[in-house]
Length: 506
Length: 76
Image (cartoon, rainbow over the protein chains, first blue to last red):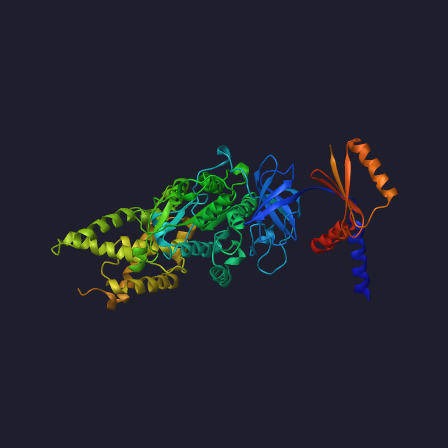
């Protein structure tokens, strides 16, 4: 009985709080509605990019303002609308509600919950479109963003605040690298936003499950506009993702945003532009498809101390057709980002996973974003691998090789093999350093090729078990002192002697 | 010439209409022309639409406000 009274009084006070004034709103009448585009009469003061209330908790976005009508894109099916229906302005420029409770949630580009849990608690309204931070508010990129992938952290290092493109054909492991990077941020104090654009819901469910199982949802937000969602929602999804990231950026935090993928994003925008009858250009894309991506990716930044010191790192994904990186959208995004990770189907099929083409991949931030210990071991690795690849092509045609060339080939094979990695087994940077140290300093030269994978696995277990001090000192000092190097050398010698059965016939 | 649409839940009496006419003339001048529509969906009250501005005094919108508040409102 007491609870009943309590409820009654709270309801009474709630209702008492409501102001029953006559509301004023601006309305318009739907003249035509087809293919998700409404032409509306009225709405004289509607602003560009404003949210329009279509009724039944559905919204539209003004994209065309003309003298006597407004072109609105429906954000959803809006199946209840018909000619003559009334729609009204919300007065709100396209924005979504973000608060600290959004971490761990799956939301749509308007911030509405998709995971069956209650709506995200009230926080700040973040605009989806925002002017990127200016030149004077930024700082250069110096802190590493550890992906946990040896090939990337050693030779194509990514820094916090950088934009690095992951580009390749379908099925080459682009999403795997991105998700692997998210998994590796568990102890890195980085909040992750995964934006799924035009993806299959089954794929997204799988991704979400993996993130949940590995505890990554404790620091990750998923924004989803899947393949069956309206093109307008797919168009907005990346901007929603970066808007959420900016909420945390304003708190001085580091954020990682993955856009999977921007090819489908450009296609959704092309669809909307063609329906709005905007002039089309190359590959039927509208004239501003470059601006579509440049304004999105420019919002990734590293802010200086006066502005909070936070950063947004962007990992956009582009899918190429037949390895064609000179197609329209890929060249656009390559010119915007600070480097690319190029994945090749040939490498993937040959068993090289991750299928990164180290020669064509580049990071324009480079070693400025590497810790000293990694720089010490990986310094010449890229050059060595490039020489190895040249030799490989040469060696196919000549069977008579001198000792030195043969040795270089063998070393190259081993260094290459060390770069192979499971997509869901990220390595901490200390672990990467000790493995690469062994490879580039010739400790693998005596091991047979077929045992290399096993060698690495047991070697890491051995270092963790017997020589934890080496890893701890590297983590603390961020570099390898002479004592650490000496200790590591003797540790590897001991380990190799323990596994004579893997060695080459003497 | 200003076109004004008055939508009410039930048929308005002559007295109510003249009241509305007076208020409209006061605000928009005698050039205003009023047309009326009956829409039971409003439940009660009326809405006045001037161009694209709509003044919503219907019972329906007040009930919608309560619905929204109870749905999203926090109970402290």
